[in-house]
Length: 182
Ligand code: VGL
Image 1: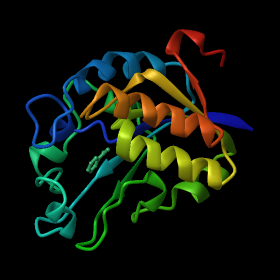
Image 2: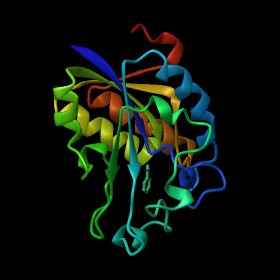
Image 3: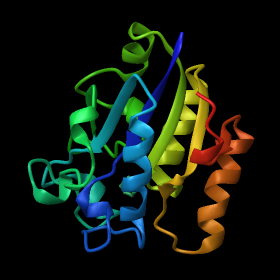
């Protein structure tokens, strides 16, 4: 069995200057690029919303499919991606968790690729990263969160830190990229 690196929603709209920005989302890109070199299986999720998504009643419109905002930042080494999981693709579909992807089933994909350990990175700590991590644990994967490869909306510092506490409480291991032993 083996480990997979999952990059959650590192998309232009979640980076500084985007439609639903994290103050420092771009900081995770070089950390993730380095991590990609260590894993044999590297996958990403992305929000891929229709223009008229109901999700935009809660959030300002972001990551509309086929737009620049939905794209990966140019600096991300997307040539290293083995698969991309699209989520939030229906009008009634919030798609916070990568396990809700509609183009491919993430849990089945990991099992087919003999991955039993998932290392999660990306945006945002409080929403899609947390939701993905909780689903990964429910699906039985040993789940790690690489904290310096995760950024948040950071409405408050407490909100940001609470996301990691919630993930830990559910059974995830939170570590930094230099503590990685794989
Ligand atoms: C996200 C809020 C709304 C995320 C997505 O990727 O964490 N947050 N949609």
